[in-house]
Length: 118
Image 1 (tube, one colour):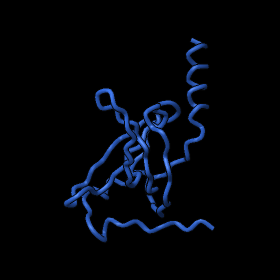
Image 2 (cartoon, helix red, strand yellow; image 1 turned 120 degrees about the horizontal axis):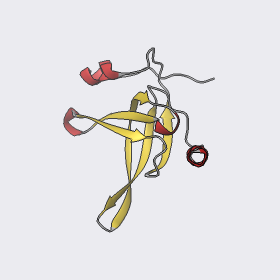
Image 3 (cartoon, one colour; image 1 turned 90 degrees about the vertical axis):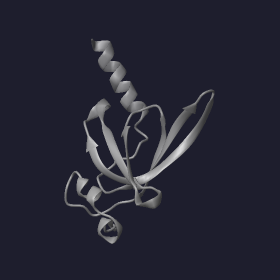
C-alpha cells in the first residue's frame, strides 16, 4: 500500500508545472486526440465553471460557446496525461465557487468582469 501512495505522489509532482485554476479563469486546454493511428492536439478555449475533487482526483469543467450560440462543456482530469498544457489567459472576478448560472445566460449577461492583478 505504501508503494501506491508513493506512485500517486510522484504523478502529482510530474504535473506540478500545471497552473492553479480558479473558477472564472479563461483557459486554453491543449488535449491530445487519437484518431485511428493519427494523433493531434486540439485546443479547447473557455471559462472554468467548476473545480471538483482534490489531489490526484482533481477535475475541472470548461464551458465555451460554439457556433450558433450553442454552449459546450467539457470536463478534464487535472492530472491526465492526455492534457499537454493548460494556459490561463485571464482571471475573472467571481463571488462563488461554481458558475453554473452561466448556463442559462447568453450575450452580455454571460460576461465576467476581469480581475486586475497589480
